[in-house]
Image (tube, rainbow, N blue to C red; front, side, top):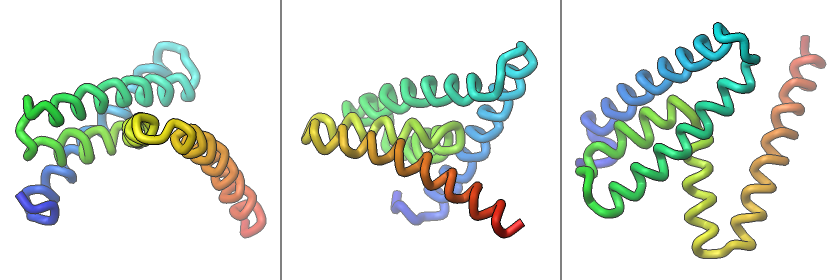
Length: 127
């Protein structure tokens, strides 16, 4: 299956929709239990990171057909949490170059937080 085939794109879209709905349900459920929103985010990030690790290994060992990858990893987990992809990439980089991986993780967190703050500040200036 080509990466840009209608089947692959449909799988990513369907998985993304399902993952997004699941993330929303986890958020609603967590808040209804009396927890603040950040705990729902933590829950989906940790769960998504676990599942992407599991799936990546199953795909690497060819225990799951490759055609499921766009649906499950890119689509579902991408919709559920983008942190899972970050986690998988950081682990892969750690295996090759631990120092570079540490820099990647630190830069990703610090720069992303600064970018988010920058967006907030820009919106305040423009509003």
